[in-house]
Length: 236
Image (cartoon, rainbow, N blue to C red; front, side, top):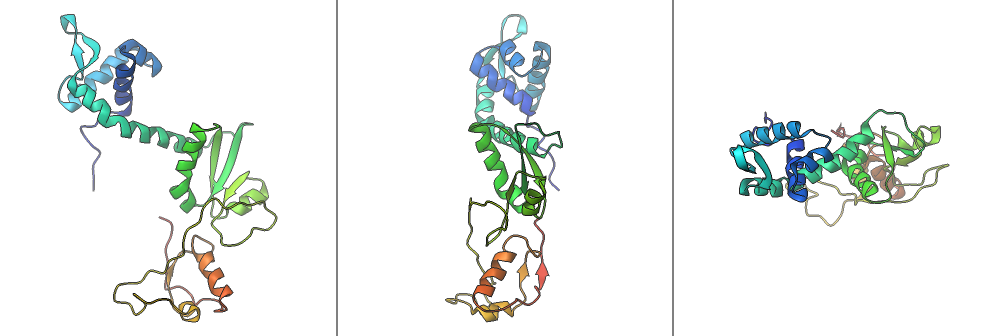
């Protein structure tokens, strides 16, 4: 089992160093992060212990100045992607918080697959664009959440139209059949729809992910209802 990194300073210390580098002032950087100078100094001291040396130069009487050492400059540069990712994660986590929705809040319903693969990037775009607050409703049936009024917007994985709802396509994925290299279908130009419908597959649960799309394609090809799958796997 992997353990937490032991030599990585906490995010506040990294953000503090970044802001000291930008402002040239320990007090300004501390104030911007809601810290006292004493608390900021404690964060810097802990960071220095973790990275094995000073990250700020020493002024007279051994006090820390607001000038970064070479070690401090490198640490700020290397921490840039981590701080950016943490900022994006903060936006996504805010959507998970169970807080009262205000007038400017949009309740978004999404299934676990969509939330995992797409939602964070959309939330970051919203933050960097027009702004606004989104609250996530994690549900296997986002369309039902919109119909019931529990959500204003739903992101649905479906191959067909939705009754009684206004809908727009925001993304699409190809439907791919995957087999082992030694399988008779490997390398073939195509698989007969009736043969595919009659073969137990490893699929998602009913109504989830690619399962409805597969059933729709087989129905359109006249292959009828597929046989029960060999196994169903969950999103996680």
